[in-house]
Amino acid sequence: MLINPKRKVRHKSVEEKTFEALKDMILVQELKPDERIIQDSVARSLGVSRTPVKKALTKLAELGLVTVKSKGQIYVSRFSKKEILAIYDVREVLEGLSARLAAEKIDGKDIKKMREMFTRLKESASKSSSKLYITTDLKFHEFLAQKSGNDVLRKVIQGFGIQIAAFEPGIFRSPKDTLKDHLEIINALANHNGELAETLMRTHIRATREKIANS
Image (cartoon, rainbow, N blue to C red; front, side):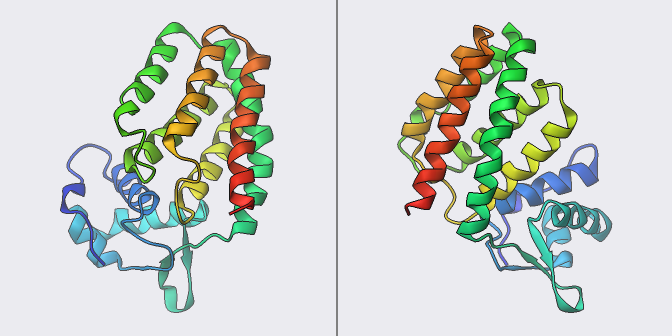
């Protein structure tokens, strides 16, 4: 199991940082589906003790990103196409609601932050396997869920987004295609047009679902 040595945990909240590091490693497939996770190896690579690694893996198991098998062995989960399509059916409705609710509460500072997220990605828009795009897309959807003001909705969307990002082969529509979708959603949010933001979000998610279904 090879782990990027740059992922050392050096700052505050060791447990949280360890969780984020492991989650990101799964999302960008440094840890691949069906790969066994060796806790001692991860702890050494991240420069932490075994305890925060164990706690991080417990949280990841709750999100469905890792699976505990016989004798306590832990593996990165592999999601089937059927499972992902089922998630997208629910995600379309919930993320549409998230966008509509966020449009009522979002301010200029939030809009600037979201636009900056995708402005930085224009140079990499032609790279369909861009790790930066995967993580930015996830952060965008999580940010909107947070701005919805509904904590239950936020938690559900976060879990779905992480599971989808971890599903092989990663990005289903190229960044060049989805970048336009994201910018249109942001414009609707900037105008506090909740109805349009919901419609655009649902269309955005449905398009990806259809591509997965036909792949």
